[in-house]
Amino acid sequence: MRHNPAVRLPLRSQRRVHIVTFPIGGRGGLPGHARLRGRATGIGDSTRWTRRERLFLQQGLTSGCTIRGDRHGDMAKPRAISLFSGCGGSDLAVQNRGFDIVWANDIWDVACETYRDNIPNPKIEEGDIATFREFPPADLLVGCYPCQGYSQGGRRDPDESINFLYRQFDRVLRLVEPKAFVVENVNGMAYGANRKLLENQLCRFRLAGYRVVWQVLNARDYGAAQNRRRVFLVGIRSDIPATYSFPPPTHGPNGSTDYVTQKDVISGMPKWPEGEFNNEKFHWYYLSRNRRRGWNEQSPCLVGHWRHVPLHPISPPLKRIDTDHWRFSRRGRARRLSYRECAALQGFPRSFVWKRGSVRERFQMIGNAVPPPLFAAVLRGLDGLWNWPN
Image 1 (cartoon, rainbow, N blue to C red):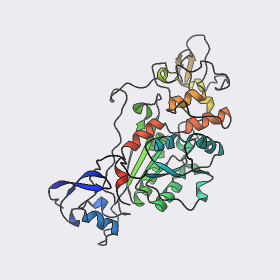
Image 2: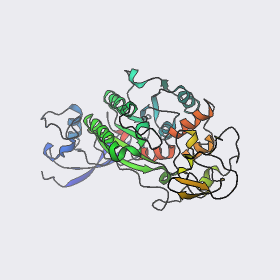
Image 3: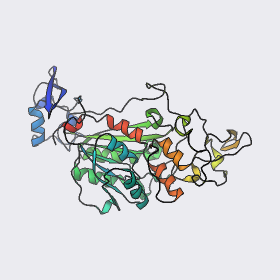
Image 4: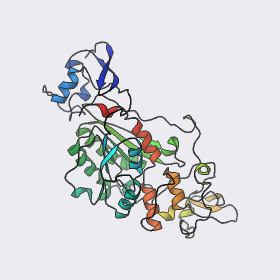
């Protein structure tokens, strides 16, 4: 179908002006992949339009235009719901981006207590998400459901029941119908036999009425001193004329500034903080890979099990002996990173309070968290969306 020439017109939303681009013409000019809410995958071709769709048509808008404009302006804060919130890594970024987190949930009591210690005006409820039936209205839904079944540091069983918690996210998504959602998970589900789990999620979220894109991002490219690759799924409700693009790197050779290093983040912290790190012997599995990086490098990926936490850069370097066999290259004291150092390498501020649970549980909370700088970078791509009508 031929489109008429595109024009640019200002659309007023509250006190801000947004510039949108759309093709002139009637319904025939709409791209087939975004005709109706709930049919974002091209299923069906009804001649009936919803009231919301007629509103956008009357304004001359189609999907495919990109929102440009100021952030929230003088409007009330956009509202967010957070699922599988953990200790609050993602929600720290959400709040710092100007959202009011109206409801949050996690099943682990220690994580919920830590969340309440650090997130202002916390509204987190402890319990199994499957038992909750009612949720407040929200503009944004975020979630980082557990991933042990396809994590490199987990059990790697693609059929494990914990892998299917995305269905609970999908249930809440359909009930709340936010303008957008963001999901973070391990990059292991993007490859090999685990890829079917990613494809199942994409299918469900698209059938729920969202245009969904995904990409693997590395936390070090966005200001964390850690080499941590994670997959992100971002969806925009298909009746909203906006497209999402993942942020370009801000750090490293493709960014505007150098990578943040371990020296930048942890050099001023105590060198031997007794009681804050795991002092077990380095068993053969621990030394099956190089778990040390230098001061001017980024840490290896931090995991939730304190036994597998990387070495502190004060430790002697490791040298490769054979396949899956590494050994310290010289004599000297060596230790794993402390939980406070791990939190700093994840991008948590030093003011973040870690007083709940055992030391082992603190490592688990931190290793399972989303690096706040990385999550904040993903959220920036949605700025301007929240002024659109519901």
